[in-house]
Amino acid sequence: MLLLNRLDIDSVARLCYLYQMRIHIVQKDTSKLDHTAYIQNAEKSGADLVCFAELSTSGILYQQEPVKPLETVLKSLKDHQTSIMLGLPYQVDETLYNCYMYYDRGQHQMYRKINLFCPMNEDKIYQAGDMPGLFKTRHGLLGVAICFDLRFPDLFKQLVSIGAEIIFVPAAFPQVRIEDWKRLLVQMAVENKVPVVGVNSVGRDSCNEFGGASMAVDATGNVLVSANETEETVLEVEIDL
Image (cartoon, rainbow, N blue to C red; front, side, top):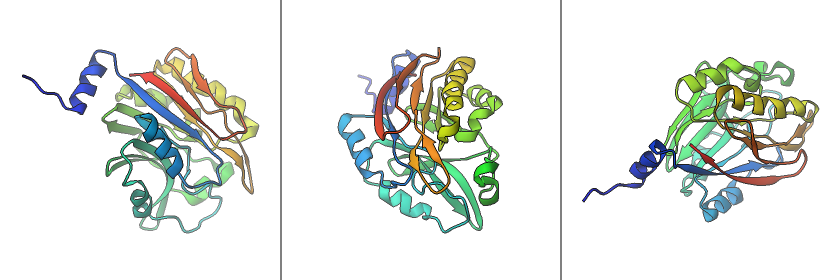
């Protein structure tokens, strides 16, 4: 008799177009840096993945300052069994990157933001990445584009061309431009025929007010779930891959 482990079952389901990924989309205040309760709630509900916004471990940096070591972030996640995606500043020697990380059971993968947003001083603080964000996971191939990356359609086309089955857009998108955010998430889903999940922040810091409106959009442009522009919330959605 043929025995299949969980990874095999998930692979077979995806091939048959039956695999549904259960996702928790966490829209939280940019100043609140503790992820623990959100991850625990996702695990209790049976979510496959819980995802947070851009720089969710640090808040937005407008000037160079010490950052939490990667080892500290990984240690805080080690007891969790659900898959986790979150944003963090990641330092390599003297170079700092604006990164988004996929973590699962002791293993992690990183995407380094390619398109830095000069009006928020990112080009002064971070080094730009040069590789598209594609995470090879037990849930499938997950693409990532961070915040300002959303304004670069060729990056989304590239992600789809290398196999992305869904694209996540973690962000710290300001309220003043939030209508662009809503429009572009739908546009990228429709143009590339893949689901797109936008994870934004709310709240205010010393420089910006963030506009929320996190959402999940299917491959036809239908908005499956969405949050408002001001309140912390967790969206739960199942997406076919």
